[in-house]
Image (cartoon, rainbow, N blue to C red; front, side):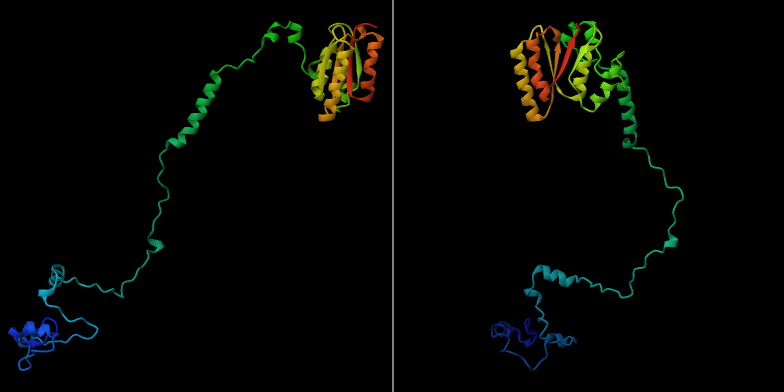
Length: 266
């Protein structure tokens, strides 16, 4: 007798194929127990939740190998617990090991030293001078650029009356009288640079009435558009005739221009 590989029941060897073809319903031998029971091993019917054991003849090579070498299952132990280390076991060294100096620590000091050396080696740059400055005489090159550099004129000094009016941007029209080289032109230019006004320089020997009227129109437009005043510096104003000097009356009285007249005669 042999055991059916599907249902595990005892079947005669010659009827095993017909028994399997009949869906394990026919050709059963109820007289003798199956081969497993004859060898002393009790046969166990598979429960509904378990699949019946398949004969090794119908198993794949991987299944046969797994059945021959079963993998032991490791059940988790309930007694395994994690115990953290106590703080008393940790020992700290009083002096931590010193870190070696890296390139980042040395780089700033080296960079500052190199920059200082380069600054010491480079000579101070001289201001560039154009052809007009080179051709100018010594008196023109040494001309003061601010009222602080002007010496010998108390009116524009630190306590001067004209100096306080200039600082308050209340520059009046004026006639600068004096001999040659006393600083009339220099003072007029310094005043114009301090108040930030538009500075126009003319000379009575080369300018006429038509040019003066054109300057007046430009000054009126500048005052109306930007609010910037215009200072007209007229050198040798005493050489204008009386009728030519009367051209300045209207713009000066209306405040459109500020007139700086320079003369050396009476």
